[in-house]
Image (cartoon, rainbow, N blue to C red):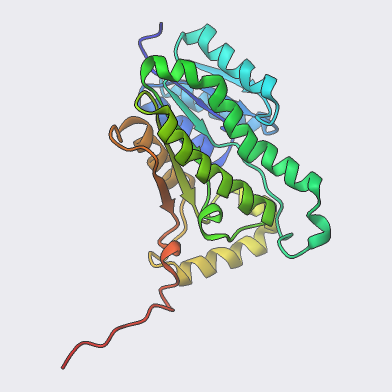
Length: 264
């Protein structure tokens, strides 16, 4: 068994996944860097992790396919003989379709649920025995969409609600050997949003968040990665938490806050 801890990060080619993989590498973890489409970026993520001192594996795989999930776990165990952390970051959505009922057919729901919810479950199931052996942890990358019912599309909102509920269930059933938590970002300043709604749409959304969020800023991928790595490597008595990383958006708009007058 390797002396270094080992983490699997799905969707680790870009954005939050890449930032998380690098930060874990800097904290002394070996990394399985998973991607489904962004091969060039995933290779860059792998190289950054290796430069930080990690031994790495780069594997293409679709978490919606159970065989791909099992193959990732088998590869990690063959290489390092241990899995200490699973970060379920891979996710997809439809953008701009929330009010277009004709676009929201069963196939759209099944595709998004297949990656976001079923993929999360399949990765957990593939890893659970190995995580138990080392009292490891799981961090699911969810969204405020699952808590507030807002987001890019109804299937996405529903899938992240499922991830939140699954996180709570798994935290109960896998204790005390495995801690299970989720992070719930709002807007993240990454390529994911720009690819989904275009630069102009992204700029407008970012400006709206900065006007209305109590903290007046969106999260960077590194902000989200910091929280994930804290849950992995520092939060030893924390399980079953849905950590909102939305600049306070779940509290409501700061412009709409009611100011109670002081007594005279």
